Image 1: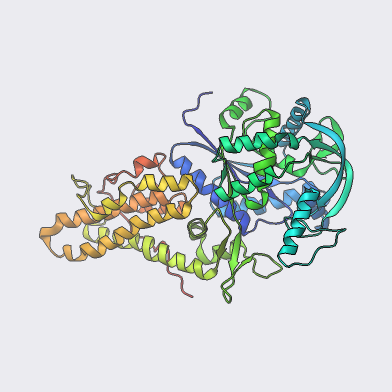
Image 2 (image 1 turned 90 degrees about the vertical axis):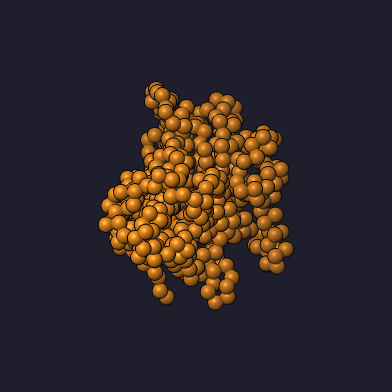
Length: 540
């Protein structure tokens, strides 16, 4: 099959179904969505994958706790919570995978068979520390280092019989069971060599350094099966064992692009889509995606993804102390996505989290800051520019936009501001530095607002001899609005479409964003509509 556009395959983690999606889950998904929309606008053939991680002990326990007859019934009941929120947040995923789907089970079993055939797994007995809430195994070294860090921080030592989990600080338990092991220890040097040869594989830089330090500390073979419960994908060559939930989950990235399926169509999909361009993940699952997953792919003889982008956690700024605190139900500071949507609306929700949060680090959020960003960037700047300009265009040009000037509006501060904006914006977007990208758009919007004050169109309209100058000023402003609507589209797709509709343009975003940002694209001479305010001001 011929493909006319280059592939861009982007994924979120698949999310556990033991609870409804929370603010951090939504943050990660919107972050990936903005990139998917940007890449489509740049002419890529995008596949954007998200989904649900449905296997494992935690899910089986959640089903029982909530009175469901089976884990599958519980998973089925949770699907609408994810799909509905993603629809509300305008997530443009092309696929939604569930690890209980037959395509995924076939993929996992093929992968496990490949590991066996290539000599990278063996049966043994696991005796070590296990965190049940995180469903994660830890070595003696990891546990010891965590205890040393806690003591160094002035905290009391944990009970030696139940040391605390390095990830969640809850008590670990000692387990012993028969298990299949993956020879992770054989991939320490291959991984280090790969990181050196592909310096952009892990982003941002601080996360890469963290991973390299971890791998240099030594890798031990990894237990990849469980035999004490059966809610998982059975091993194709040993039905007493099911795949360890994290190995099962990671393989979803392959399942969605044809791995494990028969036929030419699946083979073509795999060849076209794999390796993925980027996995977007949270910092809490960095080891799985940057150490275990690449090692598994090496062992199976498959290419590695091009990049893993690791975002930090959202924290809540305490309005009284000003300090950032971890968000949790026990602290009483957890914020549900629906609460933010109620305050800001969906478009401003997306804009706030993508423009005002530094994605590579932990980032504090607050209700006060949300209002501040909304009013400053959206109500006073972007919304105000659109409203004022369309109103003047309707008033002074009989409900239409002025026709494009022969000299494309001549030299002007707004034309200068738009010079090179695509390159600056695109560089930031590629790096997932959305704050910088959004500031580039806000800069041309601000330039246009200043241009209104400097040129005073209302004064020009009073002088018939300045009709040409007035037409040029209004056309310049409308041209900035047209360009800004394209650049804002990945952040605020519905508002951007509405702005283009009011300009009598195609509401659909451009599929050649560079070309769309070239000055002179607005022909003019079309009916325009002021409409309702895009972002009514928020008051305390």
